[in-house]
Image 1 (cartoon, one colour):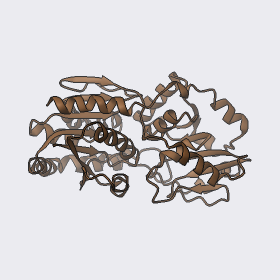
Image 2: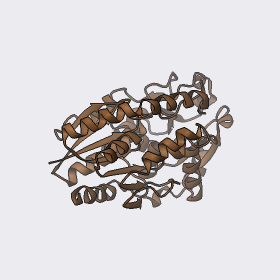
Image 3: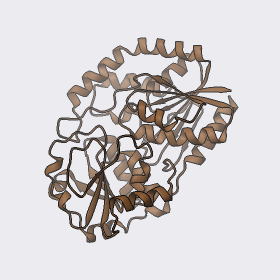
Length: 360
């Protein structure tokens, strides 16, 4: 059995959900691997997702900082972010010692990271092959937000990855000492029976438009409940369990629901920030996208540029969202997107990763 350490970014649930898709495929395709998931923020979600899988174990470890948002906003707080990344960097040497000790103790032979620098740095220190899998790195995501010395630190570790598998919307330097490959979108598999069950539960009569309203589990905007969107005629809304909006036409995803991709697939329209996880689930399910624009987030700009260029979304500014009402004509306009031209690449990506694992 080969031991794989899989490092997952601690920012939000998107990295955890998409990593779940790849881990499931890796295990299905290769009976000779065991995977140790290294993560903190969505630890309970990941445990639930693999509760029946004996070849997956878990290790609670903070992997990275992610973004820090301003209060009641989708925009980053550069000042606080600088402080947090600076602390992360100052503690990195100790973290590196802890990770290399763990890898030696568990006889780890391969590292996958989405997309924490910690796993990549630890693998490099032990001369273990590593593979970065993401649409971005924190190096490029933080450009223009944090000090140059901190960016230089991150760049030094990301360039140590053995392989880099970049995803749709990526606009990265040529990482990967040995190889760089490009892939499209992927997500966890869709169960059509579950999708129809959810639609019937939310809209028993079957005459309403179902809107997935996804601003992310780490976004806390106190004014959301005051938006006129909830009064949209003939519309039902799906929101995360943490969204503090209580209207008769708003359905909260249960806190214990692990297969949240079914709720995205059950919608007629996905209204979301440009988080890659939700975007990819919508694309793979063929659901039209309406994206809120965050110009100050470099990762978002790359994602939005890609989606617009390939006619995969419509855009709305945050100020427009304050007065938005969803209409049948808006949904019909969004349906002209070319989402159905894309397929789920999880199987293909896992095949390529397994080739790298077996070759080492």
